[in-house]
Each structure stands twice: as C-alpha cells, then as structure tokens.
Picture 1 (cartoon, one colour):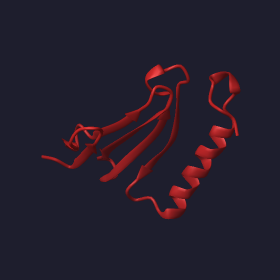
Picture 2: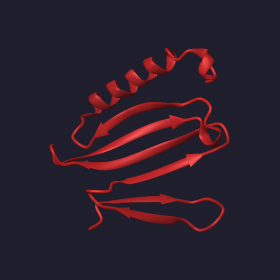
Picture 3: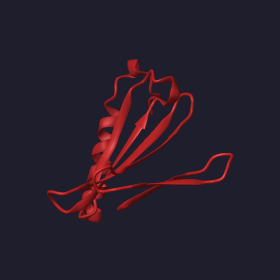
Picture 4: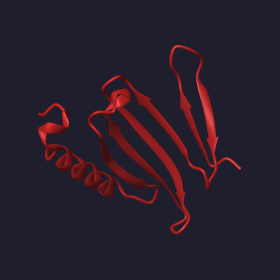
Amino acid sequence: MAQFIAGAQGNRESVTRLGSKASGATAWAHGWTFGARVYIGHDSANDSDEVYVTLNSGSGGTRGSIELGAFNSRDTLDEIAATLRSAADRIEAIPTHYGWPQP
C-alpha cells in the first residue's frame, strides 16, 4: 500500500511514483555539475516519517555529496532549524579541493 508519492516534471508531462513504508520514495534532479536528492521513508521504530536531503555534484560526479540533513515528521521547527544550521557549518568547512565554490 502506498505511503509516499514522488513526482517530477521536465519537458514532458509530469510523472509520479508511489512508495510503501518498506520501500520509501526517492526523487532527484541533476544538472551536469550540481544536483539534489530527496528520500522519504518510514522509521518504524518511532512510527514516523523521515526525509533526507542531499546536494550532489550532478551527472559529472566529481565533487561528492553533502547531506543537508535528516528530518523527522516529529521534529519541531526549532529542531529543523538546528539541523539546517548544522548543515551550513559543515558546508563552510568543506575544503576547496573538493571543487565546491566557496563563499
């Protein structure tokens, strides 16, 4: 039974895919040098849903990936904000030899 839905649209009509508690659902969008991936799944231990957001180096695949965070449906806004602040700190600490543009 479907618990999740993922959708995408490009230059054709939009499409959707269903995911169960066991499979979850993943959506991604990649350019040649930059992209993002979002996964949603069920955490049966806490009976809640989790979302993982990752930036990556796109189709070229030369820069690795950066996890922006894991978010749980039970998180408060303060917990979500703290996760995003932590991601910002990790991003600022990335060495330039990985090829990510620096601020």
